Structure formats: structure tokens, C-alpha cells
Length: 73
Image (cartoon, rainbow, N blue to C red):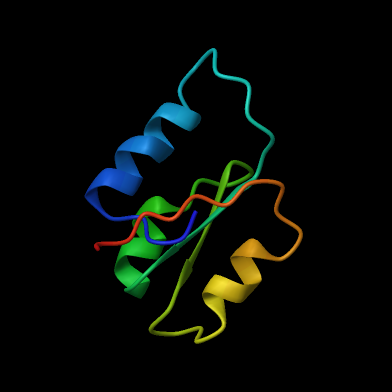
């Protein structure tokens, strides 16, 4: 998932909710390192920050079966 802000975060919560079967881990990107650390859940969610890893979006989509864009228009 590219761009995990408010809406992307809500989608991520739904994808990781109990009873929902989603291939794990889910890789997401955020703008800040702080946000990435808040979104990371060991074994379930890998969060990458664009401010510290310029290639975060490319890394996140590499080999993905599905990409969700959660960016502002």
C-alpha cells in the first residue's frame, strides 16, 4: 500500500482485522519515519518511510500481487 495516511490506515486496519485472511506481511509506505514506526507490526505489517528511504515505494511494490494507492488527488 502506497501512502498510509488516514484513509489508507483505515483500509490497513480492515485488512489486518481478526478473521480477515490476507497474505502477510503487508508492506506499506508513509512519509515520515515516525508514522512508519507506528504502523509497523512485527510479522504482519512492514512500514517504510519515504523520508529515510527514498526508494520506499519501489521496494513496497516489488513482487506485490496487489498494490493499493492511498494518496491525495
